[in-house]
Image (tube, rainbow, N blue to C red; front, side, top):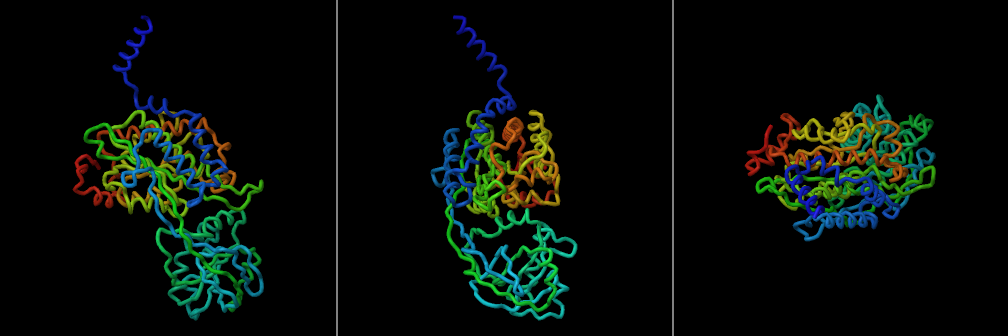
Length: 494
């Protein structure tokens, strides 16, 4: 009898004092569960989860079955948890054999090149800027230039000048463009792995510039490029094309409010990584991507589990994107082929990151750009973390993750990342490195991080006022178009 009385009292107290959203987040986000997700997703079995590989498909199956376990409904169009599509992959089947004035260059990245075998006439044009072409006839010749600009020859700034140099070569009827840089050898393998192949949503189109290469040189080789007339020999089978089949993973949980359930909050992360690459000092060739992005993937699994147990007023759509590392292609495909009208997604809560160096923070790229800022700050603070905005706006991180595919359509969509306040050695130690393993993570910190993410998501999903862009944001105009005449328009506030 005493037990029955205690149960009645417990039920009575629970009815009077229901769990808060904070308590619900703390209850469902458990350290052991988080570790289980991350250790699986970053296991060598998945071989780095590169798009189109068996490891990527295994990860997708794990995510789909986790959503099923948490009570999510499948993709409305396919009837299962997948959104399958096809990509075109362009790659070199072998290394390019290349020499300039008889000196061989072994480290080559080919953005584009046709099959060729022979000697070519080339011309050296300093940095290949507009002034360097004055008085020079480069028609049907290969132009050789230093990468970067006179102000900066590091690899990241050099990438910023790449499009302009390519366009100048095309305008001057050059046959090809070769950029040569004496880059940091520690950074080059990461760059090479990212660019030695490209993947596209569309079929290949014949380029106006049939040869475009980057070469890694020694400082001495770079200094010796000064001869204007240059002879190169080159042999390669050229860029090849093949099809890749891959998939986004999608699940939906309906909201509880008769009106607000027509609005969806999207919880998203990319689950692909860069696969197998150059061995590190330990001989490890599998780039497991625990930070990028098993952490983000686990954040979405955490809120799916939470909302599955405690549904929110707004509906939830959980999307795990493939091919982010290939150019945000999974999210680009989704916005071109949404499973329900995009204007029903009123907020995108993306999570992605390359690592952390401050375990007192949660770094939200775009924190100050939407009216949900107060919810995100409150959610993080409830678990002892300070939410900060982008510490390096010059890097334009907002436009470098899947959130931007939705922001460009007008959907408010920041990216929730682990705490970093600068790009330092701690970030570079793991970002796109073989050492980014599950056992290198601080799970006490991550538990707080995930709890803050889930609590923030619940606050956004239960707020009677629909979140929106801060007035004057660069994507606000797109939002005004997307949500114009929308049945939700009356609830959207500046």
